[in-house]
Length: 355
Image (tube, rainbow, N blue to C red; front, side, top):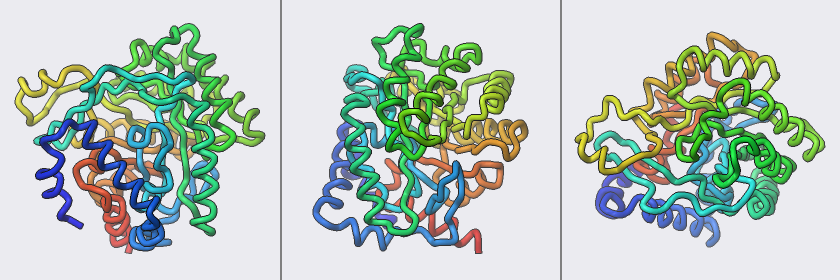
């Protein structure tokens, strides 16, 4: 299983990062389609000792896949086979959009990091909804006891003006909430112009209130709602968002999204500059992501579910986030470097640590 890093260097490291991602994801989906899913499910199944209660749901393991890998809900079941306790789809927008011009995904291998300026490329909430429904139904059949959880991350369509953002988010909430296990309002990607301005609490309050009301009404049940924040917020802004989440009685906060910072990178400055603008994810985000988690935990205590994401690569690092106050932990960038059995290895390490 540890042969993958060598395979990555030989086969993928020289290739355009988005093309490599598409090839890798295609292979994962193909394995599921040809009937290998059952074998992978047994091989990668997390220990029952890792089952976690959060958001009113039971997760097979606290470790899941962050939004950004499966942007359109095309491979939920194939990814669940690999041992992720939850798969967060998206970011999905109210309207279909192509995203930013290519190239738009870049590796910093020396830093085990990725820079992306994808721009919420997806085919829109209406197209994703039936895929989501089909995937959840299939998961129910494949996992008769505790199935992997499916979350949906929603964002603003680029062509929609900020003053009309609420209506755009409500389209996604109304369309996707009936099938989603939980919803995430993404106001923290750096790749949609002006989006991060929505993290201002005065703007965020009506947005979150509207999405919550619309989602619950469309689903006919309470759909757990979380907000995803940026690591670049000041400590005062993090505290303001935490206070707002408590006041609105949200279900949780995801901390954190990618960063616009380029501080402390090992990669040569000229290489980093060559990659251009975009959100940085991966190992360089570890310290800030952990710091935001600890700050949020000190404010919200056990009143909100905190999902930590940013730079985790090992079971020990996932456990560190859990010890710091996270109920769930997500990964993404290390998946690109470590390969398809990464989640299964994380789960084995977590189970050993718990013993």
